[in-house]
Image 1: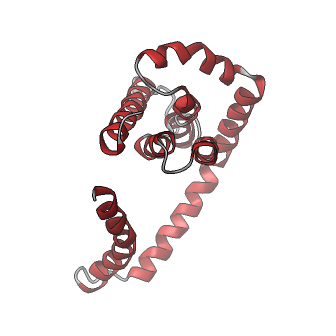
Image 2: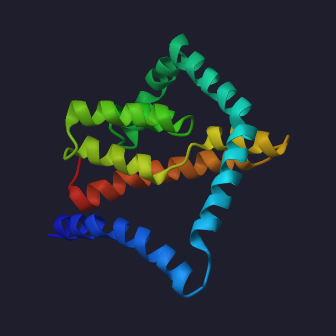
Length: 181
């Protein structure tokens, strides 16, 4: 019953939000929606050009990490620890790749969905992990680099702790809502 209610809500929520926000801005706040949208798109394009070098460097680094086998070695090394806390080993690539790159994590998620199906525990937990976490290193490298932040201080540790909490919580919440592993 809960799943059917959530599916119905999700079917209508995004189109309603996309419709209601511009209508609210136009009729209530009297904002020139099209002009403001175009101005924001122009600023977004300028930002994209400014972060492009940092993006290329980050994607190159991730490619080297994956092709060198270091990522697989790390996953094999951490597998026993994650087994002790109840995290299915099939989700380890998502656990590792999500903080690094959204595109790589999306590829991992597609592999999980193809191998186990979207309605399996692994598929649901992987999808929840993908939506519950951030690409921490990507954000730090690209956005901090584009504005000239040199000392990230505690941002890396805080980001990784938040990612770990989000991923572990995703597995727990998936087990509670859809049944155990």
